[in-house]
Image (tube, rainbow over all chains, first blue to last red; front, side, top):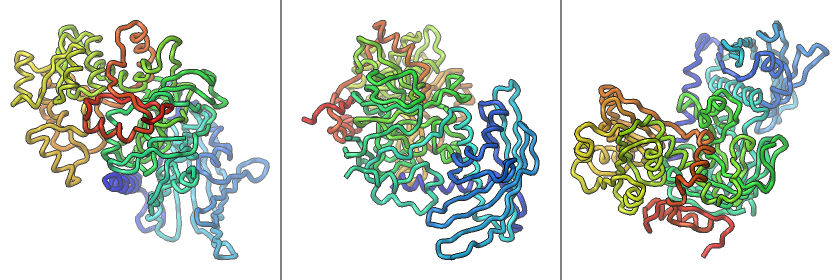
Length: 219
Length: 394
């Protein structure tokens, strides 16, 4: 019982802290600005090249990314949703100063639901700015990311999830840059996991899927 | 394979689970020949550590034989006998490069949750909750070891695996606890808790120059083993006032350094212990830090309190004013095991210490649930259990 309480407290605290620590924009306006920063033990050029590669984003964010056109300034993004359907959007680089700064906008968001034959337009605009700066000795890179989201409706209820998702992606970028791989436990053995079916977005907080791991249990 | 799985407070079971497999290029698979139960495993058994899930495989002290390595592992090959540090470290981040292995930036896949609770995340650990990575532990026939090119240390020919086993945790943990005290000749060290870590802290304190060690516990077998290591036993159940007794034994100064080798499940008597019992029952406090309070109170002015005992959450009524007033140094944290494995291996090979002195029970893995109970309840004068996955149950 105690661990359940702890887990719930931890999860709630995580969402609350993420929401509180990066509150920007105007409440109720549908405009939100997320700030995330991380220090990576690699040179800016290496970090920039990783970020500029669509395959990196596919790995660190668990989605599909493909470059459009020859100059690779436009990318197409697709995320499969857990209960079917998908969302898609496009992004375009608007300013590029390797290896120090990258700016982009995202638009044309669409939600494909399994229940509907046609896509629903997602009226969310995204503008992002990535800046990279070497530390004093040049051995590491200070990465700062600012993402501005604009939508007709208030996005406050999804803010913690988005903030967590961005933070997780940056941690995974750091793992990739520093170690060449992503730390994972997905696919490792475990005993049966009866009754462990959390309603919270557990997969986003813990890097394991109890249902998937439970299915691997020996009969 | 067989593995010891956690199913809730007081409930651990042997289960049949799939064998582990290589998931990343720097992984290795180790066939476990020796796995120990750590005192900190009891915090999991007793439900004090958050973010456990039913079915988690426990165990972070183990040694065995490499059976498979990932494509990027150059330092090991199948057949090597290895002992594996309990903290998982990438070897390449800012912290690993500075020898702060247990603070590795990259090995915890669930770093976001740990960062929210603690401000930042330490390294992932084997078999120690999803907060600290959710890695399957080594109380099993096989275990996957991430970053195997960094962590596992080969056991030299001629040295028994059992002799190297405790380099995975408790010997380095006891040693770092003593090293954190910055001991000088003539120093008196008081150590709360004569379990396995306390026993190694006693011997390490002498290695590092302590002139006297006062070992505090209430179980005669543990105090007897502490005395065998040169310590002066102090059974706190037999004294009216522990603080007064420590003042008496140190001629009014207090110990130069105090080591809390108990952690978040302190027992004992008195108002502090009762306070913690009540508040943890009411879920108004997560840990029972009575020993830490006693150590801060007892330590001499300008001394050091070293904390190898595990704490997990929120501690009430800490005498921080005493710590400030006396100018104490507080040092703590998970052990940077990788830093100590080779130097301590040399001490074992030189004959300075035989780490097997602490073992009281050798049992098959199949008897692990019983082993947990006797270790937790201090039955059969149990101090340290070593499990053998290949052995058959009686």
